[in-house]
Every structure is written in structure tokens, then in C-alpha cells.
Image 1 (tube, rainbow, N blue to C red):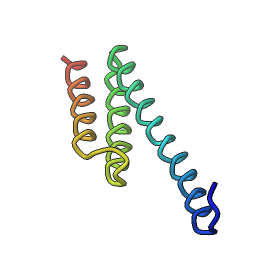
Image 2 (cartoon, rainbow, N blue to C red):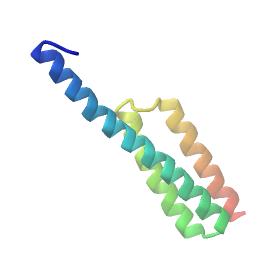
Image 3 (cartoon, rainbow, N blue to C red):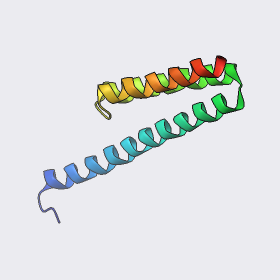
Length: 88
């Protein structure tokens, strides 16, 4: 267990950041599932909205270095590809 005041503060900060990061990653996973279900159902408007939401969330996560920039691009690319194949 930490003894110094600053070490105790760092532990508190880490817990807050961990909870925030876990929530953001969970939201991204949920949005990916939402895109997939909208594409498979054939609802192009809902799929487009879901892809837009996913892209925004992924960009924000990449901006704060929660996920790597290339991973963000990969996620967005796969979602856009799924949307394009849904219309075809």
C-alpha cells in the first residue's frame, strides 16, 4: 500500500482513468455491434447513423491515445466497408 500523499493521489487518479477508459472501450465495442446489426438487418439509414457514431467515438479514443491511430483507422475502414456492402 502507498505511504506518501502523492502516491495515494496517483492511485486515485489511476482508478478514475481506468474506469473512464473502460467505459470508452465498452462504448466502442457496443457501437461496432450496433453497426453490424444494422447492416445485417438491411436498414441503410440506421447503419449510416451507426457508422457515423462509431467513427466519432473511435476518433476521440485515438485522439486521447486510448487506442492506436492505425487501429482507429482499421475499425472505421471495416465499418465503412460493411456499410458499402449493405447497400450493394
